[in-house]
Image (cartoon, rainbow, N blue to C red; front, side, top):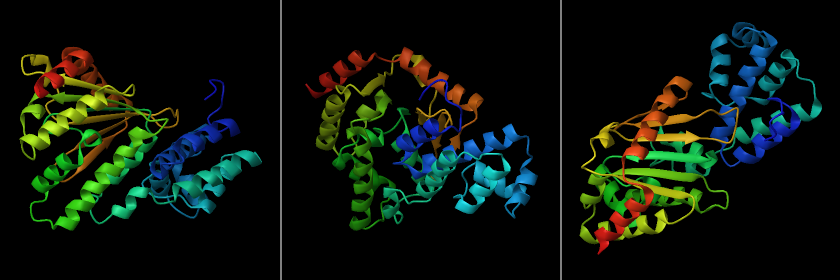
Length: 300
């Protein structure tokens, strides 16, 4: 995006549409952040903005934080209130509203998709860099189908085979993001324990490690191993996913998953903390080449 571009000029909005059109969730976040910036630039309080759209301060907050999908009429009324009159800019905002209201491809898996996970998938679709640290399992974007099925069996022991198949299919489809010509850079750090935990049995694990070797040799995939013998590699102790975007209106986001829930962090002081943790891990653990050598050695 041109460095001189204003937050809401036509070329900038065109760029946002091009980059995030595949992810309604990301576009919804961009739209909310732009509306907040315009409101503050106009010196209008959220309460007054809410009244202008026959709503409340809480409604404005939900729109700006992308907790709801925005309606065309509400956005147009707010833009008028904020003094936005350029026809091309208004048209681009209308496109943003329309696209942000569309369902993502992953929503056809709603029956097996946890409520908190859809947002992550949508954000990964729009990310330029995905950094992840895993302490127990191979990251989902790098799993083989057999390994993923074994993981699902552990997590959902009572689920019928059809449900397991749907969960595995969803996970495999998510990996298409890495096959795009404009794929994000995936930087994965795995605790060495992941390699010694034979999920699915020895053969499934061996095929999984072989797949890691293949993926680690792609230009846009970096794999590093956090070995047992380096104390600094336990600085995190829990999974972290850090997402970065080529979108000034969409700041870094950190995803922290628990057993039955997940937390999304977007405050700069929070995301910077986790970014520094990941930086420390990547500097302390094995280099990408050393990690590749270890993976290949485990197959010998």
